[in-house]
Length: 569
Image (cartoon, rainbow, N blue to C red; front, top):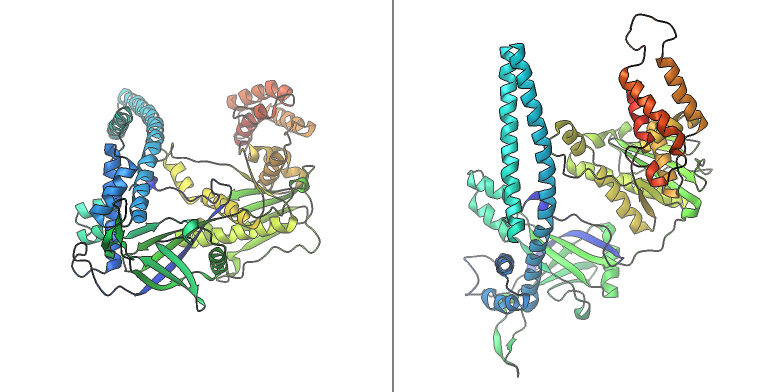
């Protein structure tokens, strides 16, 4: 499937509990002694046969659902065609149905994003036409040649997006969905180009087995996890080896008991206690078995846990969190919206796993309630290393909030897909800045530990901190932004103070020369700054009387103050 077809993991389930996923590895040892003459191929084992049949049933159900078949019809026919038991067959149909529904939801999103990209591509095409006209008028052959190349590229870009949008709109009008490539579109393209073999492609299409949980049948009837003799055991049902031995009074087939493949299940040590508690309580759990290219079996065990009681109190205040590419900035804010000094004897919990070099984990504590955590390696490390560092940051932040008994306030940023592949500078920043991963890790860890999290609108938090709190508390822009985030979570409105009005007045006086002099760099007021100060004069006088949502809107007074700060640097 496409990259954007994969659903994101969510830390909180819809029912109000925590959706907890444990990843482990399975080592199958005990196999059935016989093979199926009808379903097995070559020398493949019964477990590989079961996985191949399940994946084939999923693809078959996907095509039948698109044709309009019902779930009950497919469930009965699928058992006869693929030899799977009723539950395996139903799980394959549900997975196929989820793919169809997700494709329909993503179609509308893809159309919206493509329309936005096309509008910007057309605007850039018009700019390229104007640049070509200017180059022709200037009679500069080098500029003309360069402008023609740019115009040709942008014209091709517009044509490509128009064709893509037309196809997506046709799917929407006809009620269809784009083609789905099971096994991965990228791998299929490599196969077509001769860079990957067909065996690798087939293995990617038949390497999964999935089973839902059932509370009435001991957690999971098809893939059962057990704890025996001090270790975890996973038993996987091989349903295609079950044979019919008769029929019941209603004419339904009576099958023999299906054999199981058993083996040791390795789980990370930090998750073993939760899985053990899961088995004792009888909570239903979902198991997905994935066979990797090197022949190892990965296991994903997912279950829903009740949310723990909150150990934080918003009446005490908030811990403001500002995220940066190389770390975090925190502000300890009391309920009155003021920075609160750190408690006596407060020590930042240092992760013992980081010991590669001295500056790997840097902590700067300010006594007036501000704190910064820097990990320079976060900006350039590989994905698996970055994921580990983000987990460390999340654990440290949650432990700080838990020690203070205060919830965490963070920005609800969403970069989205609408600007991707049209703005090279923004793409580089968005890819290298793992903001979403950091916030998701903090939210997930906080939810597990009973620490409250409150996302707030991100509009103008850095601008507010720059104009109001940097000089007052003698901190950096990131600390000031964290303070503004915490105050917004509490519910404070950011007013225009007398000190801020005096700063604007001072900038206006400094920009206006008192005597006529020759223009020099850095002196005098540009027309852009003059327009900004004129707009500020109109907005400052009415800002304090506006509602909160108007004060935080995009074109509020803070937008002009941001432009003024950038122009005055």
